[in-house]
Amino acid sequence: MKTDKLTIVPPGGPLTGRVSPPGSKSITNRALLLAGLAKGTSRLTGALKSDDTRYMAEALRAMGVIVDEPDATTFVVTSMGELKPPAGPLFLGNAGTATRFLTAALALGNGRYVVDGDEHMRKRPIKPLVDALKSLGVAIDAPTGCPPVTIDATGAFTSNRVVIDGGLSSQYVSALQMAAACGSEPFTIELAGAEIGARGYIELTLAAMRAFGAKVSQPTPASWRIEPTGYAATDFHIEPDASAATYLWGAEVLTGGTIDIGTPAETFTQPDAKAHAVIAAFPHMPAVIDGSQMQDAIPTIAVLAAFNETSVRFVGIANLRVKECDRIRALSTGLNNIRPGLATEEGDDLIVASDPALVGQTLPAEIDTFADHRIAMSFALAGLKISGITILDPGCVAKTYPAYWDALSSLGVKYS
Image (cartoon, rainbow, N blue to C red):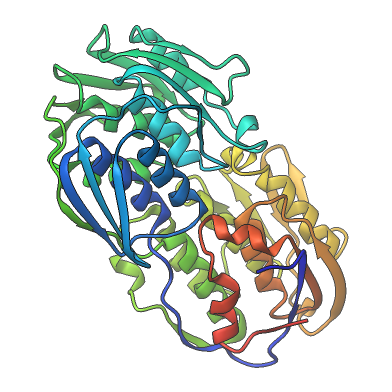
């Protein structure tokens, strides 16, 4: 969307039609990395083509991997099974998956690698992963605790066991798991405490690893043993993005429409699909919603909560403060721009003072997206029921859903 702002025109009726969400960002970036670490040619179908996956693909190309794109949803990856030191720093924008996953994988490379990103990525923490890799004898440095990260790799870890704090992000754990299969001996990963950002994403990681030939067992709920199998090239199909589906599920219930996304909610394997049951309960969503295991769906549900019959408190969402932006602050700021007092922050909880009477009102509000795709897409839902909702920097949706505005348009939504 080549404009600096976009105002949603409420459709005034149900949204009905068929929209196919893009492929899963989480699975696409896992599969791209595993294909890059596998010797041979892998064909990834149903893939997401967006800023985040483009950064991953470009990084792999910079390290000697051939990544072809024969159509809009396919990557064909041909690799010698190694990631060669690039000529310069790897720029990964604000792609957290690419940044964290590559940092661990490159620790088993040979030579110097610099992993960097944009101004937003340079504020996102990576210290727990860096500390874990240091404990494995890796010469790695991230002076600010955030990217850029410099790695001088020698092709091996000095230990076959690591303890990692996964409380801030499950991506640290996933990164180590994917790298570990490329080691020379069985490797054990243990959690420092039982807390983990979103455990469902670990299951996504393990499923992708196994598809590429890895062998993983789980001796305890807080540990994993990864065999030194390496990876084998394979053909791999990627399911639609459940986080993207939440906006369509939200638009459906908010307008009383019928939107066919082509995939039943119960068939998704991604954690955010848990949001479907909560969204389906609208306008009687529960008074307390734990977002710990469906973090990327919380912006969608929080905007829906503005129109719920009763107020909603969101708990277990502290990790949202270290996403692409501080999403708790972005949500409360946006909601309060629509109507003062609509949202309150209590510590890391977000309370939405639901008001069904908002429907049909004209409440001119400019929504600062903080360059965050999920803030832009979720607040578009408010514009389906309130006149005057303007999304600033609507093009930021290109991070994971480049066709989002066109998708809403195909359902009958207009913009001014």
